[in-house]
Image (cartoon, rainbow, N blue to C red; front, side):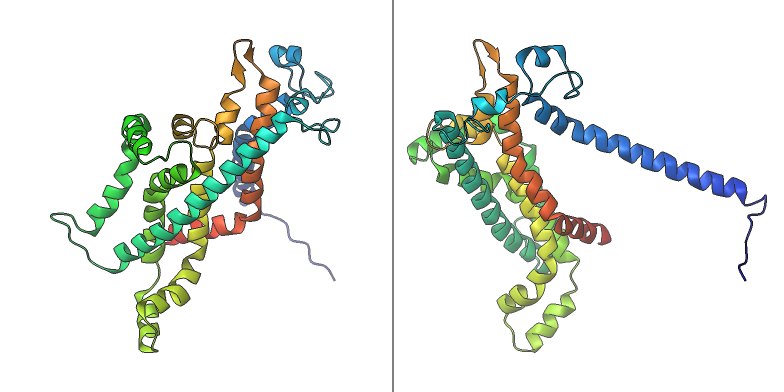
Length: 304
């Protein structure tokens, strides 16, 4: 026997208000998703447009315009040119390799050094003149306030004297310094949220401080480390100013190559769009694959 329950007249306004609120929330989320994804959509569609389609602002493929491989053909990445020799494609692969090596190396180095510094700030008390732990942490973060253009001339002179101009090592060291404050700030909160009693129990069991850090603390803080790694990777991958200033031929990165699509004849929007999408595709893949670590890292920081 099936029982049927009916809402009383007093419950209907509350239920209507609940559905209305859910509709408004999901509507805003969908609108925000469209706004965030539109630049990627524009980049992808522009890479398949001809010059008149770009100038007219046609947006819908097969409706406003017929997609062509113009942008990808200019990079040697279209179906009819992928198996033939292409100087532009070779240049793209070189710049892609430079960006990959420099960004990954700088991000890994920043996470390692930043995690060690953050662990010390969260577990030990330091005193440097009038500065305490909180002041030291804020000092690291305050380095981000300084505009990069202020550091242009000092780094240019320094790198010239050290023979680091147009080298991967020079950019790796500079990018490590650039993202290190962010990593320290993120990881300090991660380590501060881990109970000290876990490490004390490990020390009682015979582990050293390093042993407790590597076997107890690091596995717990791994989601936050991955989140810091991804953020560092995005920042270093997209950095243009220092890459354009300190490199010329051998260590140029993808952002520099994207900016080079402008010339005396104007901007090759189709080539720039194809190159831009090829440049951001690895970051999209990394974000999708490591999404659960990003969420865990954000949740750990929010939980604290």
